[in-house]
Length: 484
View 1 (spheres, rainbow, N blue to C red):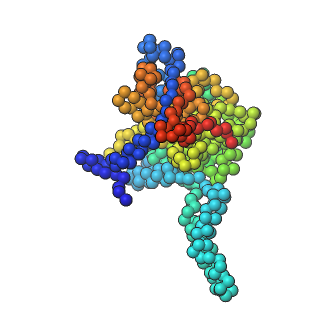
View 2 (cartoon, rainbow, N blue to C red):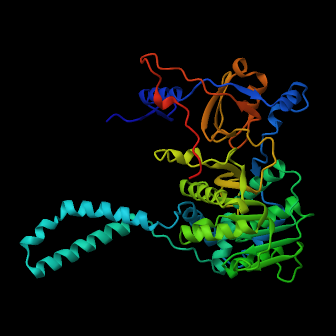
């Protein structure tokens, strides 16, 4: 078979022309004409030069995040006498492992895999052969068959286990994960602050708090209003390290934040918290039932917003959307709505198509912690999936604005945006100044992956194929799917 890749004159790898044309054809096939009108208030500000397109209200900042110097210095200090090279190597291994994690397989998944394996074994070791064997030979043959089934099942089933953090593992986690988790939480909580300027939380709880990255960001954004920080992590060593970081690596130093508490379990009393966070924790739960019990417990304690964050992998995205759907179905007593990233409360359109393995995720750039001159790079990126849920009704007129869910493709005289719309669909729009106006085109051109566009989209107009009398059924817009 001919290779799908070829080299250009400069030695760079590129797609073979035939495959490129095919992929371009597919892109055009699912692209349709659609109107886009800029919100009147935003349009007036743009026309009167009150704001520039690159600062339109749908833009989310910051795009590149660095750890505060005090935190960087503290993290270097907590390494102590541990060999720097070993800590860096172990932190890289831990990072790779976390990014490759899957949730525990469900009994149904295991049963389905076992059924397929049995079908494979039956084709190779037919049960009809038992009739030709003696009792002893049949028993030996059955044992061999069962061993082969269990061997293949073990090979094909994800071997989930909870990560146990001791004192050294907590330090490795802090060095390898602090910068990127801080960047993700800074981006997510900053969006909440921008979207709801009236929100001034007085209490904060973080389940699976780890080294306290969520608390660091919350204390920066709402230091004057938050009166209590409640951190829950099952690892006592993690809690101790988190407190040591607040003490800037000096055990006898006074913590600057007021009312910081650490526990290994959720409080039994029915206390309400304005801001509830569960970040990079869902993978640590043994099964779906445990996830739902903890999520519902946290949702009952929520009296404002609940933040759910995970790795931006396919599995991480599925866990975030599973949690979001479960909480939105929690009942009238605990009714809520989605603030971000979805402009709707419907099922994520990424999960409607089982053949599409693309996760719903976003990208953040951050400066990694440098422990030595051998530390690589001044800029890295991290993919994350998240959901911001509001207890009650979201009072934000900009909630229906579509969100850009993949990098904007900026071309000559046009820009292509892949959007998640308020109707629960994924829509690709090719913006041009002639068709959509200068304001809409300028906003689309400068917006990035994760930003929202301050526009309202019309109904897609799909042209039927010229070669057929009827329109292509695959080009029809996807109907929004109600929460199951």
